[in-house]
Length: 112
Length: 94
Image (cartoon, one colour):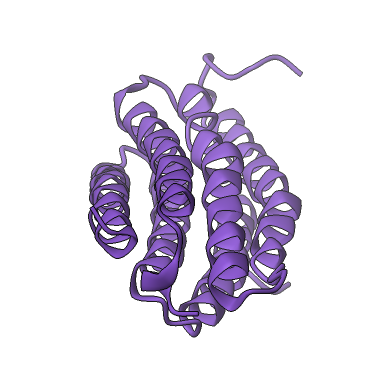
């Protein structure tokens, strides 16, 4: 079964889920540009990293399962991996930012 | 509309939005103002690039894009952790 043999309802469902996911990723990036301070900005990309990523991975699982005619769950690997790593990276980054701001005596840092 | 046309145009629109969000992340990466903002921009940039490659895999129907997306996800995690460590300590491996 090639992608062009997908039924029409499946194609519309896949496209709708992918579009919602990419709108969420775009919202996260707009927040990354528009928000004023680093400690606000660090929250914005998580929108794309959690929900946007999850929706696009789900759409990908649907697409490959339909077009290969069997359950193709390999794309969930990306979802599992990113779900585990995103909090770790952002906590490390926020800690580094707090450390740098404290070292410079910036008084806008969050309290202990 | 046929299913392949729906996939082609719909996923193309999704890719356009992901491209726009990559551009916004790249703007944040270039303008800073501080090093942690640049690292955060890079993190968002690689994440959106990974999503873009996943969508491209669906759009073209080629399975190899999955491996590329997986590798970008893993390398991006390592890069961001190393950069955060560098911001904290001034060196990556102590």
